[in-house]
Image (cartoon, rainbow, N blue to C red):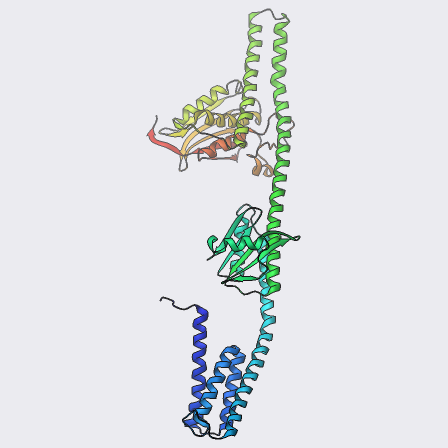
Length: 489
């Protein structure tokens, strides 16, 4: 049903109808059903007027007084049936009745107002308390100003709320508020051109001050608040905005501190990682230059050492470069369809020196779909899993690789016979630069490998995880969605 009148106007019309019905009922009762004298009628009218003043407001009581005087005159004063008054004392009685009803109505309305004021103040305090609690739960990462505006609108029941953040130059809206409706008023209030509690149409504007400095302004649409409550609301908003800025500053400081700490950890780890291949290269090259190595086989062995350790250094540099790209959000995929088995073979070929002396078994299911992947990046991710298996498992222990299909797509897993991952470390396995306290001192590494693998797999829309095996050892897996429906043998 279409609503033609606001709720407040409709309620007022209903109250006026009730006024006329009540006076008419008293008049009919005393005129037709139970004839009484004029004094009794006057007292009945007066009681009805007092009840209306106490229940509704002085406006309804005033209208009831006027209607009662007219009915009193027409139906109960001689000559009856006209508005003329024959006897002068009836004029005195009529005006005395009107004065009495008006004074009594005014006193009753004031008493009712005084009774309601403490209740209104209590409700305002409860709403302010609820807002203060909501402010404590604001998420600084999800438009805090907009959250504050919505909390004010929800808690106080305003038709609309507009919050102007002067420092950020942003206007946050809630409810039926619009930027065009409030823009000028908000900026004027923030500039001190509109005082607190100033009204423009249906909106109430107030500046938001912190330490005497204007940091913004607030506008509420079709709301009623006392002066102290409006001041307290503005102060709460000021505290909330300052809390958000303080939290953002603290987050930036913490991020900077963590960044410096991670850089220090990375440099320390790289220094230890680089030391081993550099020592081997230095020893081999010194022996070659000293001409103490005479046979071709010995020279070839030393050159092989230099070549392998140079590859090791290259891998370390690649890891550091990839981590820097990941940190900068610059992971770019040059994806194309590939057979998962071929990617595994490529990774194994690059890891041949590290896997020397180990038995590597590859189990590959038939009918696997092609996967859409960047071959260089996915090979790098697989090498991280293989390198992790080599580092954390006993020398000469086997490494098992499986390529299979599941509901998640293609799963490539690498299992080893190393120690299980302790409970305290499971949540941080893929965290950048994290290394378990129990292994960091006797297992070389930077803590970047698994983090790199996770970022590469996530960029493709895949998953990465691990599990401790029941018979001992650990299995890391990568799940990638298929990129094409063509099957391969």
